[in-house]
Every structure is written in C-alpha cells, then in structure tokens.
Image (cartoon, rainbow, N blue to C red; front, side, top):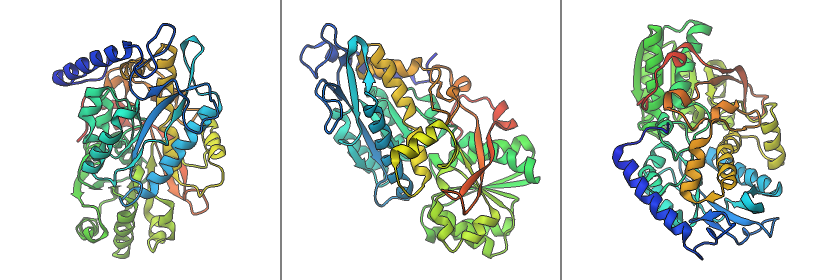
Length: 436
C-alpha cells in the first residue's frame, strides 16, 4: 500500500495524473507516446541532451534546487550538487537509461540548476521557473524549503530526491529519501550514549522547523524510553544568536547534547560551551559537521567532546559506491557533501530504470515506478532494503544510523566508531506520522 496522503491531496494528484496521461497520448507533444515509443510528457525529449556522449539517446531533464551561495549549508550543498553531476555523468557514460523497445535516454542535471539561498520563498520561486522543463528533481535541498513546494510536487507528480532527512518525507510518495531520518538518527544517538557512556540526561539544541524539531522529537522519544531527563532548546541561525543555547548547556550540564544546527553555529556552541567548563558529550546530526571545523578555534573542543551521527559512512569508506564516487569526482577536497549527493542519486536512477523498462517516462509513470520499488542498489553504501518505497511508513522506514568520532587524519575529519545499527528505541518505535 502506498504511503499516506490526505484525501484532498490524493484527489488533486489523481486529476493531475489524468491530465498528464492525456498529454502523453497526444501525438507530437514532447516526442513520446507513439506506437513502439516510450510514453513521455514533461522534461523528456527524443533529442539528445546537451554535451552528451550518446548522440542517439533521448534526454531526461532533472532539476536541482540547492543552497549554492549564501545560505547556512552552502559548504555542503555545493559538493552535493557536484557529486550529483558526477553521478549522472557516469550513468550517461555507461549508456544512460535503457528503455523498452531498444530506446535509451541520457540524464541532464546541469541545465536546470537553481540557488535557493536556503529560503523557502526563493525555493518556491525557482521551482516554478524550472517546473515545466523537468521530469523530476534530482535534488531539493532543505526541509523547510522542500516543504514550501511539497503540495505542488504531489499535485503535479514531480518525483524528487530531498537533500534532507526529515521524517516527514517518509509519508510522501513523490519524495524519495535515502538513509534514516533525523528522528531515528537522534533516537539511535541517545541509545548509543546510554550504552557507551551511561548518559542520564539529554538536551536537544536545535534550529526551529522540520530539521531541528525532527531530531529533537527523536531525542525526546529515546529519552522517555530510556528514563532520562530531557530538555530542548531552540536556537536561531546565526552566531550572534547562540548565547541562550550556550547558557542552557553550561548551566544544566546535560550528559549529552543532540546538536542540530549548521556547522558555523555548531563551532560557536561547542567551542564556547567547552570554554565555560562543559565536559559532557555532543552528538551532531548529519548536516552539523563540516571538516573545516577542525581549522576553527573550536577544533580542540570538537576533538574532546564531539561525535557525529550519520545515515551512511563518510567519504573515505571502503564500499564499491564510495570507490565509484571518488573515481568519478577525481581530485577534490574530501567533503561528505559529495557522499550525500552521490547516495541521494541512487533511488532516482532505480526509479528511472523501472519507468523506462515499463515504457512510461511520464511523471505519472515515474511515480508508479517509485511506488513499486522494494529495494535499491546503493553499491554497498546502504543496504538494499533502505530503498523500500512500496510499503506503509512503519514497514518501509529505514531505522539504521552510525556514529563517527572526530579524526583529524581522516579525509573528512571523522571515522566510523559504530557502523550502521538500530537502537532499541528505534527498533520498537511505531512510525505513522512525522516526529515533530
């Protein structure tokens, strides 16, 4: 059974689907739907992609909306985007997406790239600019930004790979998430802290909105399950806004802080808290870390107090997927933005392969392909079962995360301390709606 939707959203999506099917059947509209041809409607052409190695292939256009200049996650988002370009370049060099009837299509992720500045309004504006030219989105970065276009993604059947891990995506058919969400990641981190260093109290320090509140929700669930003291402190973006969080940490002295911010704010919080005598542990959720933190004034504090949770192993890991990523990227400064961008691309490829095999590269056809996926080949970067988009949320949600320690000699400043695991809280958690 497909993931949950409201009755209204389902009705809108069904009406949109009928319109798209009709468009796909009209001869001469976008180069698809004729006898023996793959059905297409939006964002797919029989003409070759620009700069493709395969001039006889058609072209699938995917959009990218990311934080490319001035937002808090640009240091991650630029390598995320570059890794996705490298991923699809590799796909094209291997022949592209093979379709029914001997046709093939390359994938273009460079013609429709937009900067969202990590601003929901800007995200919505640039989405509207490219919406009519793309089959789907290879990347939509951010939880609050993606939430700003979610309703239209559903109504228009625009399958999209979110560059975020909020648990809200688990109940949306059009959003093909990879790895566990912030909620289960935080649950596992709290359980790890109890097991490894006997934590008795936990504080969630987090940004407002889906990103921070999802992790805080998971931390609270685990604290309640483990019988720990729990508190939460919301903090806004900007180094000038962190005094309240620092005061809360240094006055309450929790054994564990689940930190869900951007890297710059994390440097202030960790460094200043350590400087004021805090001796507990921080575990940062996925986007909190950046290796540049080891060049900051807070480097020693991170080495002493900080652990990094994550949905998969970092840049230097030894899996076929990690090796393929490094080879495709060539000589780059290691950054786990690259790792994320690469991993996030596998489900879209699996969905395109399935839709093409079905002879239906319409938006509705791609969505139906997504809903049929029970596994995805992540080339060892994640278990295949992490790519289940066909079941109810509680059955399909992937619950494993890992813990890394700070290691200045590692390519991205962290090495795996505990590989993918599911803590007792996540194992027993009944998931039917977002955690925030």
